[in-house]
Length: 124
Image (tube, rainbow, N blue to C red; front, side):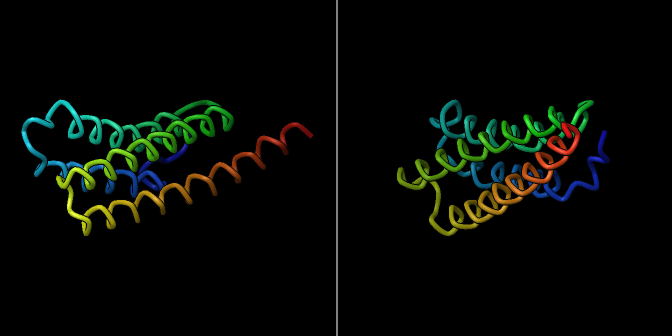
């Protein structure tokens, strides 16, 4: 089990989720059940899966949940690009959010590589 509050990746994912909530608060009301809720759900899924993985009993399980979190980040990335192309998300805000997502994806990949090394060491 990991100390969640000390995980930099989890804290950055929380910040991203908060920023996505703020950005989507300006979306039109007719998108409430579309891009607004889908983007928010994907954004919340990222830190939630990191948290669930951190609370699991094995490194392998944690690694799996990091993969799910990463998938959600790609889903969020896609939804934000669509919102921008529909002119309901400003390009400036899109760029800021995409930079956060990109940083999280790199961190997730690096974290998974480290966990994979631990998993492979146990096999020896």
